[in-house]
Length: 327
Image (cartoon, rainbow, N blue to C red; front, side):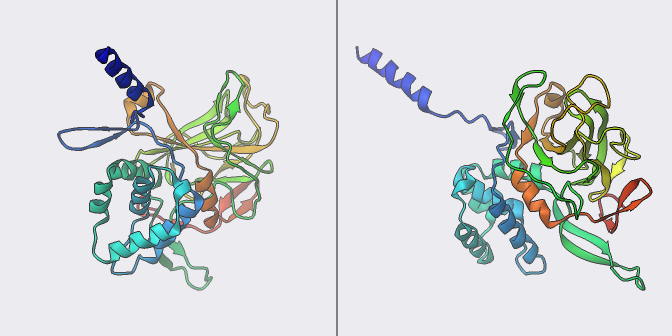
């Protein structure tokens, strides 16, 4: 009877105890292997840590927004609904007093996981770059530090959106929506969020005319779908190097058709998504990690690419030099 009671208790415990599926650790070297990412960082947390990073650029204590977010993510167990700016303020004060954020984070348990996971999303989004001075008499460039990524929608063009990640889709088969829809006018210039290499281009039954751009560090795949019928993009081909802020295509409503160049989407919009890649082999086996980019898209409103029209095409107005593109 006692043995039976103990078995019941053990089974009950195993049912209610959560299993950590997000992280696996190598006992030998403590490497972190990320199997899944729930990117639910709020806009406010993204904005506050970004500002802290930028404001500390020329200070004695340089802050890193990915590390700040990783520490907070560890503190909250990944639930940023708990976020309070006072927590960030206290963390920054501890760092300025000489405490090492990595040592503090490691004491909380899963800091390395959150640093790896959030870094896969945000690494390279902030850094140094050069811009052209807005002076007709002076063609010199100006060095800056800040966001190096752009909103997917060009400056001066409106759109509407809401957090639709995970909502139901039924065309072809029932599935979850693994991207972010931005409703706008047909022909709205679409902007490359991040610099990288065109990995896929052309027609897809679900996404219509689409473009996929892989970041230079190979961690992110930016997906732009439902582009304009007849003229989805200009001079885009696999292997082409794209610079963040470039015009890469035009908003449309193509897709949901096995036949090419068909408008089968009810409302014109850009489907924008980010896939994280930690393991190429798993990706080839169709194990994909897509994240909710709603809060991130709101943050990118801070940096919109201004464009101009020449004949039938749009181009970026202000060029920017990024070290990683060598141009």
